[in-house]
Length: 595
Image 1 (spheres, rainbow, N blue to C red):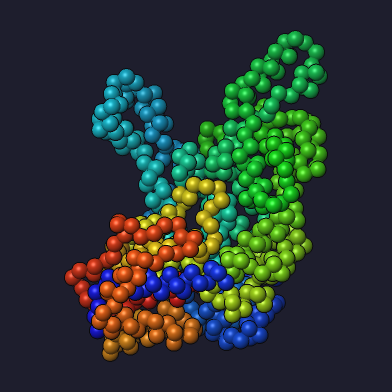
Image 2: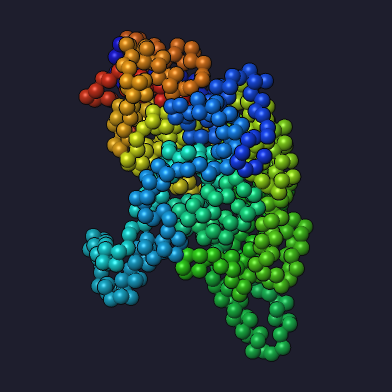
């Protein structure tokens, strides 16, 4: 009945490849809801509909969640999640030990300074002589820096990022406000900033905490404005260094030669600070609002960049509009004229115009539908959501209601059409097993290995929201390895009690365990085909050679990579625990990898 783990892994890889890839081809506020979900018209039972809601609007169902949603009423549960005000005392207690995640940008600058700043401070304080350290002797140099930091209670930035990543995993796994956390992930990805850009990295925790999370179900316009003024975004897309071009109209209006010289000197200083930078202006149109086909031109990008000059970050790590760096000339963006002499207010007007543009309504609606309905959402649904967006002043909550109450959300074709990202897979696994997490960073290590290094995606596009992006031979091997590592208690700091999930009843056989734990971890799904596919792994004696050959020759259309010599299976040395192997098989199955 027991089989080598390598056999189990390779067999599942074939099924994942075939099954997952086939899918690629083919009211606001709390209180009783004033709409009804049309799930019965799609042929779903109330429990099946509850499981579908949990699969899309949470990081995975925990034991008992389906019962709780049915008891509350599906629509009422959804409205409660949109409201996002459930008491989270247990989570707050977990987060209490992370002292850095609540610091302001100014406090971050003081407590977690960059190495270059530490060196400058140490030289200023006389703790390090400017020419006393031979930087070729890196060991001695690092020791001096560390000693100075310890003496002045300064912390390395890596500790800040570690706490930041830990809190994300704990929030996703344990918050009762699941939809708020899922939407936080969605909007952070939409307005992506990256820890790979060192200068903006220290400001990213406050970006998520103060800019993204509080605004995920509000109006889109204020969210857009908040991101534009965030130090993290200003630095990430270089708008902090953008300054105006010479304003010869200003020179024409002065009377003395001395005034002319003073103005020219100021303009030269602005030029030396970087000149006009179009990065943010381009991305705010292409990625944040209008979309690549939103109807703007390169000239609109240039003019918008001029409008946004002077929006910068001051040394204490906060936003400030600096008039002397602003382009005060006339600009025209998308046929809207910004008269000469404007300042901060014209940047606000520009962003407001973009937030209310019809192309923005369509672009944002399509991205939301792609995240929550299907990789290629029906155009009729996108159009309906866009109309809601436009008629409600960009009310994200109302757009979400329109989407969830649509017939398209509940169709059989939409059920389990979405593929979990590595982050979603890991968190849904620990939630389904009711795991206790004391070392969340260990999960981050596995998520990274499966292909998603959270907060480190370098491009402003954010991670693609398509199943095809996540699935290739190498990633499937890592997913299977993760499932077996989790189930066999080989991930430090993650504790699970498999018997407790079954009321401390031990299954009589591996086949019985497969039946029981599939029902627990894949609630309200039809499991006949799943059991049929997974059952042979418990009994087939000659599977290894056949499957190994098949895996070596299998390819995946559109895959990012293939299996290399570095891809290895867990060997499960020292344990042959039947129950853990069964649960690992379920986590690695194509059914669990879908939501």
